[in-house]
Amino acid sequence: MATREVISTGNELAAIAAVDAGCKFFGGYPLTPSSEVMHVISDLLPKKGGVAIQMEDEIAGICCVIGAAMAGDRALTATSGPGVSLKAENLGLAQMAEVPLVLVNVMRGGPSTGLPTRVSQGDVLQAKNPSHGDYKSITLAAGSLAECYTETVRAFNLADRFMQPVIVLLDETIGHMHGKAVIPTVEEVEAGIVPRKSFDGPAEEYFPYECGPTEPAVLNQMFTGYRYHFTGLHHDKNGFPTEEIETCRKLIQRLEDKVAMHEDELESYEEFMMDDADVMLVAYGSVSLAAKETIRNLRAEGIKAGLFRPITLWPSPAKKMKEYTDKIKNVLVVELNIGQYHSEVQRATARLDIDGLFKVNGRAISPQEIASKVKELY
Image (cartoon, rainbow, N blue to C red; front, top):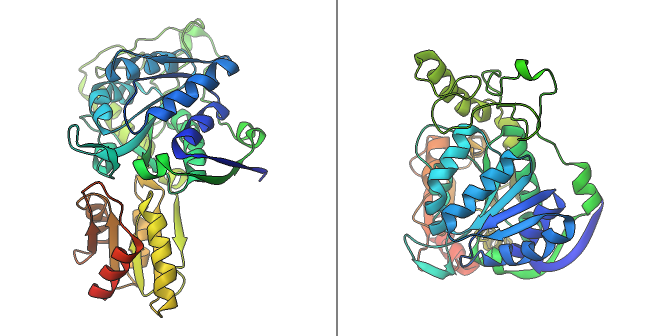
């Protein structure tokens, strides 16, 4: 893969990635600690023929992004937890109508206003179900500066492949971290762009929501001569509202299965020094950086620790986690919340003895804290 070296922050890299991935529209509202995503993309998009708009609030921010995506553009919004709460209703609309978009959430302390300038990973469960109803969310978590770029690029391709919102989780630490990142070249990214499917037959034969039971809708961009109805209601193959029992059942089951039946395309994780590990740490986002330093220090003391880092958080890499926990007794989940992913690790592995190290005061978890916990438990 052709690469380049840049010195930047995580938030800036997410904005740069969006533009390199073909994003043509940004709509949002400034919210700490995500504001730099909007600042940077507002400078970059006009130079590429795109548009960036600061809307009057978070709700309008997601609404205009949905409109741009329906018109055929790759579109982005960025915010933090309180903003996702405000966007929730229209994220549900995008799930139901199958509108592809990317949302970057730079997590901060919550709930409510919380700790606006401090780090947290408290939005993990929110990202699994940001709106009400039945559907399957796609959520990616960047664990390095380079991944703030590469996971944002991947999110756009996944959004167009699965025709739904894709969430990229950063956190305050990794969003504001400044350093060197090795990322793909623009040419490499452009070569890997996966365009959304479209229908090119006679207009009278176009039924956007008539698709296989595990496949997404095929939504031609607006203003190209193909007509269909756009609604948040249960709908038929043309998009028109319906309460017909079997049509409604098949629609909601398909929204679940179009992701659930293709998890192999979504699954992504890192294994760090896991080959001979006696102790398995599970961490993601900025916490995984501290976990890696911890593992190096523990191994210097003769403790064989390793890291399993989920990159795709939802759907989780459940099978792989269970493979490891079936053979490794000592497992510690480390996260900046009170066990939001810990509960998923327990579910995936069918083990209730999974230990946890949690922190919710807005401060990072240090390698020393992780090492002390490992020694205390094992």
